[in-house]
Image 1 (tube, helix red, strand yellow):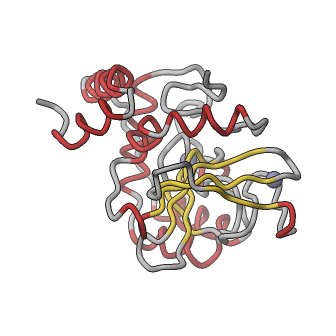
Image 2: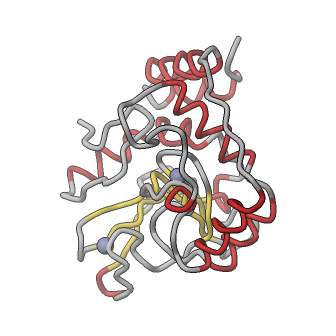
Length: 223
Ligand SMILES: [Zn+2]
Ligand SMILES: [Zn+2]
C-alpha cells in the first residue's frame, strides 16, 4: 500500500480518491525517472544568496542545464523537487530574513496553497505550486497583486470544515486555499492537501474568484 489509511479515508470522504491515486502514479513515475545531475559551486551559491537579498529568485541567478519552466517533463519535475528539498538551512534562513515576495524564492512560480499556524499561532507561509518550496508571508496581504487594503481582502471557512479556509482578494479577484493547522492539527504533503480540497476550488470559483497557480495536475479552472 503506497498511501496511508488516513489519506485513503479522507480522499473517499471528499470524493477525490481517483485523483489521489493518479497523483501517486505520478510520484512513482518520478521515482523511476532519469534525474539530471547538477552541482552548484559555493561561489554560485553565494551569488544566489546575494540575489535573494535583492529580491531575485534562485533560478534567476543559478542556471540549470534545462529550462525549468519549459515543456513538462517528469525527470525535470523530480529534479526540482529533490533540489528544493536539498537546499540547506543557510538558504532557508536567508529566505526567512529577506524574502517578502508573492512568488517562489527558488523558481519564481506562484504559490499553490498556504499554511497558517504551522509553527506558531500567527505564522503564515506560502507553498510554491511548482517546486514546493515554502516561505513565510504576511497574513493580510494578497500574494498575487500585493494589495494590502484590508477592505479588499477577506477569507471564509467552508461549512463544516474548520481545518481549511480560503483567502480572497477583491482587487485582483483571486484566491488561495489555506491549511489552518491551528484547527486542523495535522498536515499532509502539500500536493495531497491541494487535491483533497478540490471542493474548495469549486465553491470559490463559483463565487467568481480565480486560481492563478495550477494544482498538481496542471489545472487552474476546476469544475
Ligand atoms: Zn518554486
Ligand atoms: Zn490581489
